[in-house]
Image (tube, rainbow, N blue to C red; front, side, top):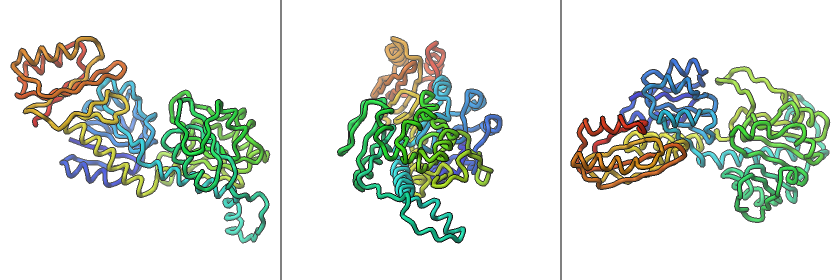
Length: 399
């Protein structure tokens, strides 16, 4: 089986696949849709980060594709609906780089408060600018967190530890950590925060979340940080509010359009502005995080292929089967309609097979059942199940 890893996925992933006998091809850059279509011939497992788009066309080309591993947090670069319809499982690493993103944001927050970006540049230009003008401590100031998930909550904890007040806004009902306080609307958060940090996901509804209206509502002299998704923020509007002096600084790690490969040219309306930190989408790019992500996602992919487990799959029903309990294991992905499980078990009984273990889960339009039997099923039985109108795929594993 062939594995294709793109975008500098950590070598620990390639090592894990090779240990299990996979043929691994690792590339440093991302691929366009057309390039990915050509590259997917014969590929069983695809590993990407945030820049490669796995579209319906690419999925159509991946005739042998079993699963996609997103070696990052987000999965909006994959057409999850189309992947599910084709039975292609998608896995990600929702927790592995949380600390790395939080530490980057905290460092940027402190740097912006002290206006370190422009002071550093002036020192490199040979200018000694020893002044406290515009520099502040963050102790006692208010951090507003938009999106209170894994990263937002951990940022909340470390910000409180250095003496900041924390308010947060999330469309979901979230439990506050420490002394953090939820607010009822984004507008309410913007009116209170000295620092606004964005930590939302890439769902379409978040596109354009921050534009001219939102920046105008921020407190004069406040700073803005985005380490979530580039499409969330109107960077032209941010530039206007930096140049006008309404905002005192910003740190941006993600952009609406990002270069495909290392060393490619980068363009942004935010280039060249004082007290603005621009980083090349490195929020989770620490050696520790990338190694953990490489290990975590490769383990999920290998587990899916080896035994049918879909733990933490983002687009298929989640089934966590125990180690095989019989001589034969069958995984059956199907349309979520009544009577499927009963039909499967009748078919197995007619074949003289005894079910010794079974796990079923449904998710939206799909159901997934993993069944262990005491004997291997004959090809006629497997063919009958595959030909059922509700079947998407059926795979088997010996114990």
